[in-house]
Image (cartoon, rainbow, N blue to C red; front, side, top):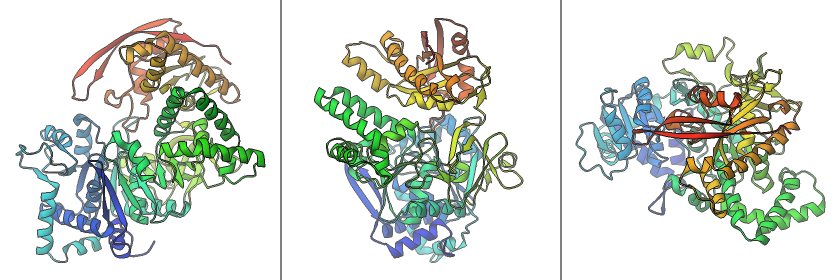
Length: 640
């Protein structure tokens, strides 16, 4: 890393000089893509940084950033860093009550938010969080009659900044020059799977190390295009849409809304793409739904060529030898099926695609690589800037997360926990010296909390969260996440929670995918009034049973997992929801909470009952609560 490019603001200045007219950010607004080049971004960030300085924002302060992926919110992150401050992106879909903890913990006095919705949340919290003094909002719609003293439009803040810049020549450059690589660049709060979220403080040096390592590993250039649509508060978006983009100088594209992501993906045709497994699962679900509706000839052609792809697609992508006949069949399939399918998915131009955040099912992984998408897994965490293991091209294994990334040392503790030492390791947990000491040992290794094993080729395979891996009464290893991911490969299953620790048999809760099962039901003339009604339908149970039995057949073929086949299951009467504290904002299962909340259902699964009545409180988006009740049927299965 060049001595003069050790912070993100310095990188920003460099791009303004070296590639002033290259597109830096795009945003779709009212159906039209708008573009800002690096020179324009430099001017926008300068005005905003000086605006923040004019209202008292200083070095060492934290700036809350809340909203969907918007260029101006990314510029807010840079503006805070230019002044030596620290951006704290927060989950935009979190209710006000959930935001209160982060706002208090991070001592937020300044916030830049997207729109009226986020302003309302912060105003509701002003009594609870009296530190909040200044709130700037980007979208002025609906804000005309707001007269609160701490409110200001983003445009007004920039106007103040331009005036401040003129009145204080050299201030902006001096503020950037004062920044050090050891300064905190961002605070990212963990998802809180096991308790209250912790603020992870990452330095400029750590984030830039992760960015430059990934860029070098995949030979990324300033010509890449990435679609930025995942929460800005998530470390994956921080790495791909901020750290790598500002380091390499490639283009970040922000969709119009969460509802238009699929369309915008096709329009942009990114060369570099990242999505958690859930997104890839949803895409596959959409493909399968469309094929169910297709004509007989088209459906048969699809399944024929997908069989060809499963046999040889991945080998062709990896450059391995494939017989001429099979290669010819694949080439025909590429013209008739794979190419059009990649185009529909918006993946025609993708050179590198990554997934992480949760384990991806081998079958799902194989599907995308078989149709020619260079999908790879990486392994990381918020505490390591999402940078621990990467999969080298030509060395892709469906059941591994790759080899330790350049500059990263990985070893296994005696209990199988993955330990990491890396230049990308966090500085600390914000105001949590106790938690920091617990996470990083005296030798400097970070304890990830994940259980893993190395194979003979040095690839790391993550089994599950170390805390979640248990043993069944017969001594067999019980890895719930492994079973759940196999279940979620099916388009009809959206979520699953498996139980089996210190039990004789494995059981599971299932959430159906409303769109996929609803489409399936409508084609068969099955009427239903909503999720609860459809989930309880006899034919829905038969459909889910078929999926679970296929998973059992797969598990039976694996020596370590053969004893963890699912013997009983039920379909939950409601979808697991972050607003009900059942999932984190990154959609990870809060296993302990679910086990306590639905203890009566677990008892019914293991008590041999054929059904169980339950009433559950649910939380609506506006904060109101209600009750959902159902008599849940429990279905038995035979092991394969």
